[in-house]
Amino acid sequence: MTPVLASLIALWLLVLSRLGPCLRHRGDLMFFVALPAAIATTINYPSVAPTFDAALGGPGSSTLVAGALSMLALGLFRSAIVKAVVAPQDQEPVLRRGLLQTTAAITAYCVAFGCAALVGAVSISPSPEQSPIDPGAQSDAGVFVFMATLCLYMIVVSIEIAAVCVRYLPQMASGLFRAGFGSVAVGCGLAVVGLTAKILRQVVVLTFVGLDYEPLLQNAFETLTGIAGLFLAFGLMLPAMSGRVAAWQVSERYHLLRLHRLWSRTANASVVIDSVSVPLKGVLSKDPRARLHRTLVEILDSNLAAGGTLLNASESKLVEKSEGTLYA
Image (cartoon, rainbow, N blue to C red):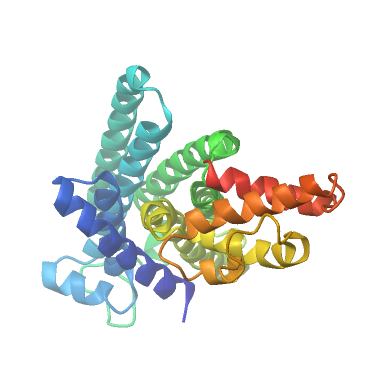
């Protein structure tokens, strides 16, 4: 499975995961981020693009539509990040500026594409094995402008999103949110490198300097942006799963599993209420939170009865982490 196909599947899974919240709340910004991104990736897929061009009757239509949808998705994604981390009273000017930037970038992209088509840089009748925008045609400055507009806009916005994610990462209490925002930051970083390779490739075919590196740059673009799509989709899925994880009390079950051996070694019979209800059984119980609370009480009371000598440094840290989970 190629990175592009993997990212395509991941994006459609993200769309499906956000469909429920979108229907329940009659709107979900992350759904409207994922949907155009998934459609753009589908349209740009090698086996789909020629069919899409033929259906619309215009060569290069897949490039135009997929690029515009990608820019829209990234602009909406930036808005979602702003709403998540910026104070409500400070959001409006930031959101307005982002909307103007996205509108201007999409307009410039479409106009440049139209100009390139008018001067013949987009082939009117490409062969089945040839892209409507072939390497020879890409020596035209119009093609360079619309591709550079797409890449530069996505690079700037990706850097903004990655910077926000990294800045607010230490302030996030939830492990899933930290993992999700960290994955988004990595995905944006990979996208920046991949898009930079794409711009360099456009410079190469425009100037005919370093043509030997053109295939390498194109492969780097496709691979890195495909992997970036995976990281972004994965990062956006994780925060959406936080509610389900909390409902299933996954963290409580995990800490019960980790505390079982410590409880077995330290628990004093005088403080254990029910010796049959060991922490390991609590992992599969209906109320692991109550069992975790009881396990911590029994460990700490036993340690207190022994004069505080039962727990070493690592075990004390484990107990503290478990307490943090219980009272989070």
